[in-house]
Image 1 (cartoon, rainbow, N blue to C red):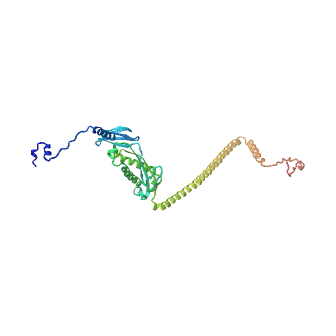
Image 2 (cartoon, one colour):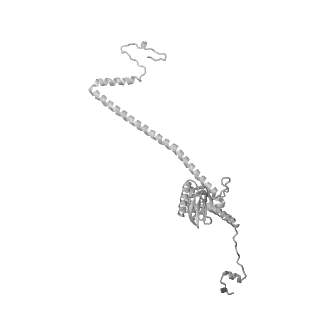
Length: 333
């Protein structure tokens, strides 16, 4: 077929005995078209943002604005909306799962050994169960920098927990350093998420339950019982020590102080006697007769106090028996 002889496209259809379909505009279709356009505008142009959310608007994939809770309007078919919960606290569970929050909680650690079984720094094995709570602090960073926030938080949390548990001994993880481990994991997890510009804020990292695996629990309990018995014996020994040793030290201190007091008393008395003798000697040298008589009288006074009944006899008296008054006990006065 020679297409050069056709000057217009219509001539081609005429040569082929074809007819171009003719579309006629029907005025009755105007309300229908308007209704369809209105439905599209309402369905894609008006949106609502919840009370704990913010709306992130993108235009051809580029961030445009963030809207607060309430009703808003966007350009239909051009702008896209992502409602992000910025006031909601998300929770990730490790080593167990909650079947129904607030009603029935089911722990199945055996099903999650791959995430809860960990090696400690002293080459022991523990089953560690913990939770991580987080919230969205920057929804724009979250949407543009993180593809799967939950999976990202889970992977980094598990890696950090394994690292920190591996830096501690089994006894430290079980009891004394649990709070320190929580804080350390939270700080490291937050640091990595910030380096990713994830827009995620870690609220809480908390160890819930730490136990040895079931096959070694009996042996582990025996070791703990032995350690507790050891601590008990040590505490009892210290209790006996604290009762006996301070008492002995007190008695020794008392004896030393008594000896020191006795020695000081003897020394002071000796000094006093020496001073008294010196004074008496000085007085004796000045008046020997008076001093002798005074010393005699003082000595007799001391002796007579201890003599009991005393009888003074007159040398010229011939018979002294009538003068004696015998008392009922056969004594004389």
